[in-house]
Length: 361
Image (cartoon, rainbow, N blue to C red):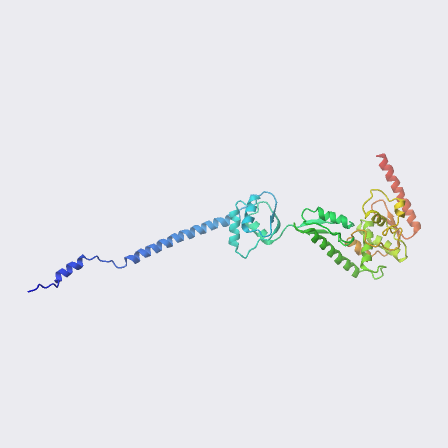
């Protein structure tokens, strides 16, 4: 008879007792611990970042190291890194890293504008960044005095250290408006000359439109020519309408203008002689010598300013046709030749006295 191989109840229980028992939920427990650990680490990192960021932001407001006003130029196409390094090199900020971080925090839409800036002493990173972002660049003055010839004005423009480029063409005499022009470093000389021409045209147009309708002038160019003579005859603004009236009255008669500066322009383009005019020079006939020609010369003899143009547009209501120096830098006017001779005699006495005083020194 075969033995029964079916395990007994006791044997089955013993076998079950020998198998390892898996504790339910153990893996999930470890996962939860790991998650909490990661959250804790993340919180620490976030807290550290916030603390670090707060320190960086505070550092951006700290006064800079420079104790004096300094010029700083942002070149076209410069990136934030290059600007930051240059700021540190020039001693305007403590660390270029701070300026780089400022640009990152500001966002991609913010741009720093090229140009020359004047940075105040101890400016912080925040203040410098705001200034470069504003685009409020330094303006330099180029001053052109009234009564200069075109060649003299070109010399002034060439001498300016903030302008760039060459000047090859000589503009027409009288086409440039004397003024103080504000320019940025790097402006081309040609651009400034073009601006002067545009301004002169605008002022001349305005003066011509508002002129006294009874003026004996046919064109704007004639007004410009007469204004250039008035400009050369007196440097006193209050006298210009009176001087203009003398020449306007002479044109109406008609009489020759007999203006000494026109002689000089015909001789050498208006350059000072360093002495008085000789009789031979007064008698020399040139296209500009108004002692020898009738009416106006063919071109202006200098570049007149606004006041001279307006004086010609609205000359003083006087019948004077003569004037001579009065010894104080101004002139004395006369409506008759006899009165003019008396004024001339007085002027010659003043000249003689000056010569004696100079000789006795």
